[in-house]
Image (tube, rainbow, N blue to C red; front, side, top):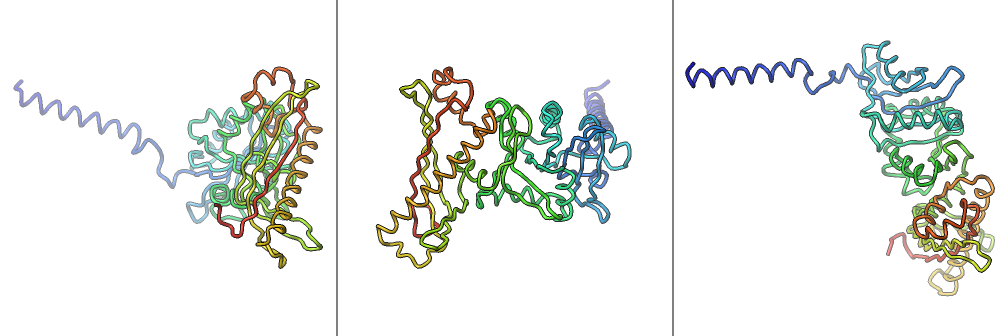
Length: 364
């Protein structure tokens, strides 16, 4: 065979195998878009029959986008069942939000199993947003589907663009939750979603301790949690000042933790906050007068201090779980002091706060 013929034969063989690979794998390795159900939001409940998964797909066709549910022992099994009942493949590669129902959260073993599947699932992003509810996930997913024709993208946009501006809750993705679970020994706070008469509420939190549901945090308690994280921007505090209700909006929030040993041997945790913000209504107060300004700064500093101390006391009495991550901070910053304690209930926590009142909403 001549050299030219060998080159032509090699080229033909190469083209044959390239074409064969496309036929075997499909163009791009998957189905056509219209043959997939792109799940945007998923809810998970625990029932007597097993885990119940609620899938809310994106509306890609005129009749698409309807929520459907599958009962199975695992997420993998639920997806397999769904695929066997429909010509459209359940695709989790676009999953944006997962809502966990209270019954599931109360079962530490089942909840851990679901988290592991989400973590190991090749198609599920570690940046998927996770939320908890004190109700059923079914109620929330149905409300999501009714509120938004794209079946859940508005939640993604809320946590991406809005949550940090309103100071009502914070976005927690799967990677953040797993990291906090590891560092805080199975404790964390999930953003809280509730459905009432079909209307959605996104505020407050769900406290998890020892890997399971502990209690729900009110809006005010979640506000304290955000301030403890240094993420209180957007939070609005109200106080009665000479018969007038004054609203103070947090524009910047920093927090510093200092640990030391007291003379009685107990460990002291000093939490100091620096908060700056503005009055969105002044009730005619002469804010440029130094004495008035200082009085108002002390007034709101005291409100923040009392709210944080009350919240910390309530949570310390409710659980040994390190839901605020304070004990984890102690272990990182002062491991020798941490060895002298069992959990965060052994800490004496005191809060101090400095407030700076701004003329405008600009952060300086």
